[in-house]
Image 1 (cartoon, rainbow, N blue to C red):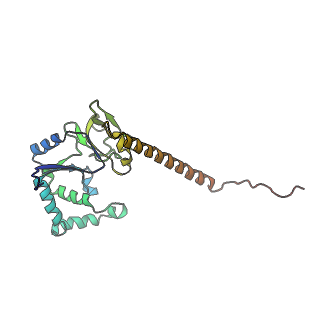
Image 2: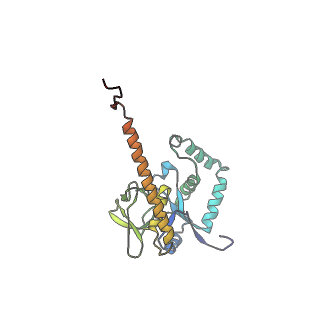
Image 3: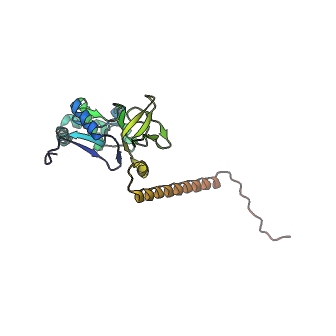
Amino acid sequence: MQQKGYEIILAADSDIMLYGDLNELAQRMHRGNYQAAFSIGADHGWVHCASGHVSCWTRAGIANFCTFLLSLYTDALIRSDWETICANPLLNNCHVGISDMTALYLFYIRNKETILNQSVVADNQVFDHNMMMATNYEHGEYAMQGRVKRIKWLRNGQPIAYNQLKNTTVRMSALHFQGNSKNRIHRYYTGNDLLLQRVFRESRLQAAFMYYKAKAGWQRLRIWWHRPGKQVDVPDYSPAQ
């Protein structure tokens, strides 16, 4: 940013589909005098995580964050917070641990007033936290369709989701295809190109569905066949009298 003279940048993971006007996000940050924007859920206080899958940073914000990262292992107060999180019994019982998301969370709790939370609906739009979760900011916030958020489309190609708590549809500025939902990302591409790639990805997805469905059926059959107390008819091969 310093070399190019950029005052503000957007960083996005490769499993993100962007649909919103990013100039609107930059203007919101400027009006609110925010140094950064990323996603924080209502449960951040006990999961100790914030997500930067789509994040926006001013030059001062990224400089402050880099300085903070260097102090993670040198500042006694920050180390105390870090060690408290590590000692959390929840982390010892789940596949959860210290990560870059934890560092982002610790930065957030020290700079709440200057960080824009993209998980919260504003101007009837929001950034998706995870396509495989109904939770965005609040628990059970969005309607699901199977294992992913239920998405509808406006005529201009803008995706919308139904917010069950607000009882209204909300424009999705971005969708986050985390985990296994990456296999579906091609279905949400709104361009007119990449046809061969989209056909290939859809064929591969359908083949995977068929494989795992057959595998699950075979497992159920084996469990049924080897069930306890199963009566097996043994044919009598003794010579006829």
